[in-house]
Image 1 (cartoon, rainbow, N blue to C red):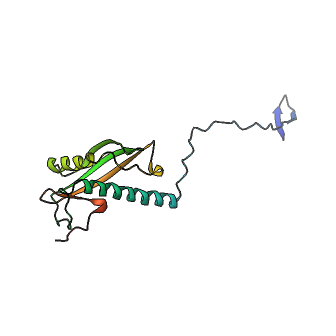
Image 2 (image 1 turned 180 degrees about the vertical axis):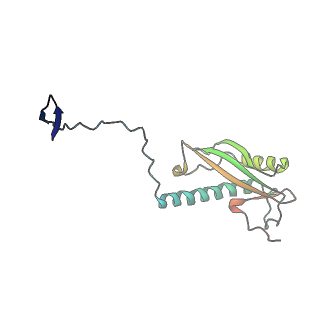
Image 3 (image 1 turned 180 degrees about the horizontal axis):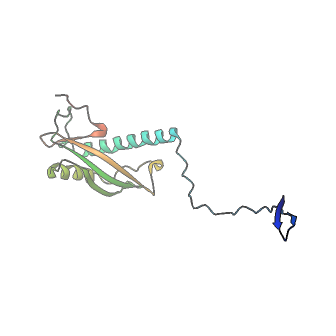
Length: 164
Protein backbone atom coordinates (compact mmCIF):
# COMPACT_ATOMS: atom_id res chain seq x y z
CA UNK A 1 0.00 0.00 0.00
CA UNK A 2 1.48 3.36 -1.06
CA UNK A 3 1.09 6.45 1.02
CA UNK A 4 1.67 9.97 -0.20
CA UNK A 5 2.54 12.87 1.98
CA UNK A 6 3.22 16.48 1.16
CA UNK A 7 5.80 18.46 3.10
CA UNK A 8 6.11 22.19 2.89
CA UNK A 9 9.61 23.53 2.81
CA UNK A 10 11.11 26.91 2.04
CA UNK A 11 8.93 27.78 -0.92
CA UNK A 12 8.91 24.33 -2.46
CA UNK A 13 6.70 21.39 -2.26
CA UNK A 14 8.21 17.99 -2.11
CA UNK A 15 6.19 14.91 -2.72
CA UNK A 16 7.32 11.98 -0.69
CA UNK A 17 6.09 8.50 -1.35
CA UNK A 18 6.56 5.79 1.22
CA UNK A 19 5.63 2.21 0.82
CA UNK A 20 4.03 0.51 3.76
CA UNK A 21 3.62 -3.22 3.76
CA UNK A 22 0.91 -4.85 5.70
CA UNK A 23 2.03 -7.57 8.04
CA UNK A 24 -0.36 -10.27 9.02
CA UNK A 25 -0.40 -11.11 12.67
CA UNK A 26 -1.34 -14.55 13.83
CA UNK A 27 -4.56 -14.48 15.80
CA UNK A 28 -3.98 -14.88 19.49
CA UNK A 29 -4.96 -18.26 20.73
CA UNK A 30 -6.87 -18.23 23.97
CA UNK A 31 -7.94 -21.11 26.06
CA UNK A 32 -11.66 -20.99 26.48
CA UNK A 33 -12.88 -20.89 30.04
CA UNK A 34 -16.36 -21.85 28.90
CA UNK A 35 -17.17 -25.43 29.80
CA UNK A 36 -18.67 -27.64 27.17
CA UNK A 37 -22.32 -28.36 27.91
CA UNK A 38 -23.27 -31.82 29.04
CA UNK A 39 -24.80 -33.83 26.26
CA UNK A 40 -28.57 -33.79 26.35
CA UNK A 41 -30.12 -37.11 27.21
CA UNK A 42 -32.10 -38.51 24.31
CA UNK A 43 -35.83 -38.34 24.94
CA UNK A 44 -36.20 -42.10 24.61
CA UNK A 45 -33.66 -42.65 27.40
CA UNK A 46 -35.30 -40.06 29.65
CA UNK A 47 -38.71 -41.66 29.09
CA UNK A 48 -37.31 -45.12 29.80
CA UNK A 49 -35.68 -43.91 33.01
CA UNK A 50 -38.90 -42.21 34.13
CA UNK A 51 -40.86 -45.40 33.43
CA UNK A 52 -38.28 -47.47 35.33
CA UNK A 53 -38.40 -45.04 38.25
CA UNK A 54 -42.20 -45.30 38.37
CA UNK A 55 -42.04 -49.11 38.30
CA UNK A 56 -39.44 -49.14 41.07
CA UNK A 57 -41.55 -46.75 43.19
CA UNK A 58 -44.58 -49.03 42.69
CA UNK A 59 -42.49 -52.00 43.83
CA UNK A 60 -41.40 -50.10 46.95
CA UNK A 61 -44.94 -48.89 47.67
CA UNK A 62 -46.29 -52.43 47.39
CA UNK A 63 -43.62 -53.75 49.76
CA UNK A 64 -44.42 -51.02 52.31
CA UNK A 65 -48.16 -51.67 52.01
CA UNK A 66 -47.73 -55.44 52.34
CA UNK A 67 -45.56 -55.00 55.44
CA UNK A 68 -48.10 -52.67 57.11
CA UNK A 69 -51.51 -54.23 56.35
CA UNK A 70 -53.29 -52.83 59.42
CA UNK A 71 -52.13 -49.29 58.63
CA UNK A 72 -53.14 -49.33 54.97
CA UNK A 73 -56.67 -48.72 53.72
CA UNK A 74 -57.79 -50.60 50.64
CA UNK A 75 -60.69 -48.41 49.53
CA UNK A 76 -60.66 -45.06 47.76
CA UNK A 77 -59.05 -42.25 49.73
CA UNK A 78 -61.61 -39.88 51.22
CA UNK A 79 -62.26 -36.59 49.41
CA UNK A 80 -60.57 -34.42 52.03
CA UNK A 81 -57.51 -36.16 53.44
CA UNK A 82 -56.28 -35.77 57.00
CA UNK A 83 -52.70 -35.41 55.82
CA UNK A 84 -50.45 -35.71 52.79
CA UNK A 85 -46.85 -36.48 53.72
CA UNK A 86 -44.07 -36.39 51.14
CA UNK A 87 -40.95 -38.28 52.19
CA UNK A 88 -37.57 -37.87 50.54
CA UNK A 89 -35.34 -40.89 50.86
CA UNK A 90 -32.09 -42.24 49.48
CA UNK A 91 -31.43 -45.90 48.75
CA UNK A 92 -28.01 -47.30 47.90
CA UNK A 93 -27.30 -49.83 45.15
CA UNK A 94 -27.83 -52.73 47.59
CA UNK A 95 -31.26 -51.56 48.76
CA UNK A 96 -30.04 -50.05 52.03
CA UNK A 97 -32.08 -47.07 53.20
CA UNK A 98 -29.39 -44.39 53.56
CA UNK A 99 -31.64 -41.56 54.73
CA UNK A 100 -35.29 -40.55 54.98
CA UNK A 101 -36.81 -37.23 55.93
CA UNK A 102 -40.19 -35.51 55.68
CA UNK A 103 -39.93 -33.28 52.62
CA UNK A 104 -43.38 -31.68 52.87
CA UNK A 105 -46.50 -32.12 54.99
CA UNK A 106 -49.27 -30.25 56.76
CA UNK A 107 -47.37 -30.52 60.05
CA UNK A 108 -49.27 -33.48 61.54
CA UNK A 109 -46.56 -35.18 63.65
CA UNK A 110 -48.51 -38.45 63.99
CA UNK A 111 -48.83 -38.99 60.24
CA UNK A 112 -45.26 -37.84 59.59
CA UNK A 113 -43.97 -40.41 62.09
CA UNK A 114 -46.21 -43.13 60.61
CA UNK A 115 -44.94 -42.46 57.07
CA UNK A 116 -41.28 -42.58 58.13
CA UNK A 117 -41.81 -45.67 60.32
CA UNK A 118 -43.59 -47.57 57.54
CA UNK A 119 -40.69 -46.91 55.17
CA UNK A 120 -37.99 -47.78 57.70
CA UNK A 121 -39.78 -50.97 58.75
CA UNK A 122 -39.27 -52.64 55.38
CA UNK A 123 -35.53 -52.10 55.08
CA UNK A 124 -33.62 -53.45 53.28
CA UNK A 125 -35.54 -52.39 50.22
CA UNK A 126 -35.44 -53.98 46.78
CA UNK A 127 -32.24 -53.16 44.90
CA UNK A 128 -32.83 -50.30 42.47
CA UNK A 129 -32.13 -50.90 38.78
CA UNK A 130 -28.55 -49.92 37.93
CA UNK A 131 -29.66 -47.42 35.27
CA UNK A 132 -31.49 -45.39 37.94
CA UNK A 133 -28.43 -44.98 40.14
CA UNK A 134 -26.38 -41.82 40.42
CA UNK A 135 -23.18 -42.22 42.43
CA UNK A 136 -24.42 -45.70 43.46
CA UNK A 137 -27.63 -44.26 44.97
CA UNK A 138 -31.14 -43.24 44.06
CA UNK A 139 -32.89 -40.21 45.56
CA UNK A 140 -36.69 -40.49 45.57
CA UNK A 141 -39.81 -38.68 46.74
CA UNK A 142 -42.94 -40.61 47.67
CA UNK A 143 -46.28 -39.44 48.98
CA UNK A 144 -48.33 -40.98 51.80
CA UNK A 145 -52.08 -40.16 51.74
CA UNK A 146 -53.72 -40.36 55.18
CA UNK A 147 -57.45 -40.73 55.88
CA UNK A 148 -58.98 -39.36 59.09
CA UNK A 149 -58.53 -42.72 60.84
CA UNK A 150 -54.73 -42.57 60.39
CA UNK A 151 -54.50 -45.32 57.76
CA UNK A 152 -52.67 -44.55 54.53
CA UNK A 153 -52.13 -45.39 50.91
CA UNK A 154 -48.97 -44.63 49.00
CA UNK A 155 -49.51 -42.47 45.97
CA UNK A 156 -47.63 -44.71 43.50
CA UNK A 157 -50.23 -47.43 44.01
CA UNK A 158 -53.14 -45.45 45.50
CA UNK A 159 -56.66 -45.60 44.16
CA UNK A 160 -58.24 -42.45 42.79
CA UNK A 161 -59.45 -40.10 45.49
CA UNK A 162 -63.20 -39.66 46.02
CA UNK A 163 -64.58 -36.48 44.52
CA UNK A 164 -66.84 -35.60 47.47
